[in-house]
Length: 90
Image 1 (cartoon, rainbow, N blue to C red):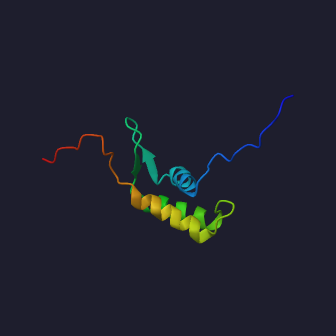
Image 2: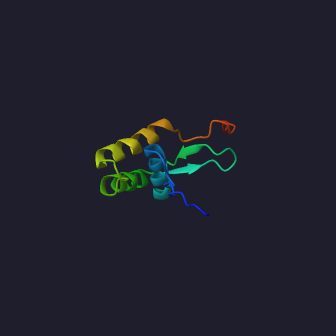
Image 3: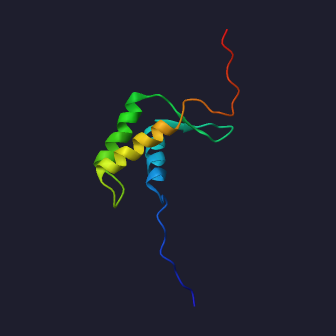
């Protein structure tokens, strides 16, 4: 007999949701070579992500908790890939 399991949500954690929102807003990007997240430094994209968090938080979370998750992800990543060679300053 064929049995079906309930499908899990694609994003399982609040941090995962925040990364998804930041990526969709254009606030972060992934290093094409190494896969590290990088902050693009775009204040408008950051604000779009915070607007999504306040207006459409994930199910079971408050708008405040969603906004805090966005801020925590932004604080945890830099604007450069740690594995890419640093550009020499001339």
